Image (cartoon, rainbow, N blue to C red; front, side, top):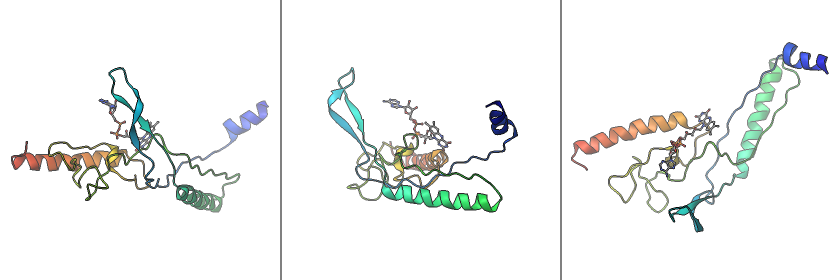
Length: 159
Ligand SMILES: Cc1cc2nc3c(=O)[nH]c(=O)nc-3n(C[C@H](O)[C@H](O)[C@H](O)COP(=O)(O)OP(=O)(O)OC[C@H]3O[C@@H](n4cnc5c(N)ncnc54)[C@H](O)[C@@H]3O)c2cc1C
């Protein structure tokens, strides 16, 4: 046991990495208000529904296989891969997505609520999908872009 632990943790050289495939938008993946459960102020609780599109796993498995191919070509041994299909709970998007059509989106292209002149949303919810990358830098970049639009709008005399 001690020898094996030493070999694994001390002598072994391991390379472990994680890659992301995109999570495709699924219409039934959404936040609604619970008709029964309320918080202590009587406000309806959020009801979160998470689903994963079957294509997500196919894409992830394809990527994992290509990664394993590359590692083997580099001389790696004992290559193991795993392609998960669980709905992500830490990279969430799409609950307030932007778009041209108020029937299918909450925000316009500048992340302003379609039917409210002075409400902008710049968190991760504007993206229908993260586009296969972790989202945070996209959220930052978009927030700066929207800030410029707000400054422009204020310059035109908007409230
Ligand atoms: C464990 C973990 C690891 C991650 N790793 C990475 C990574 O490596 N790379 C990457 O790019 N992303 C990563 N992410 C994802 C990243 O953290 C999120 O995509 C990003 O923080 C989302 O930003 P957001 O502004 O949409 O929401 P959040 O950062 O969640 O901000 C929402 C804010 O709203 C506040 N809030 C909620 N309800 C209310 C309310 N009723 N009133 C007032 N305020 C409220 C919350 O307190 C919070 O401050 C990770 C997330 C987790 C959990």
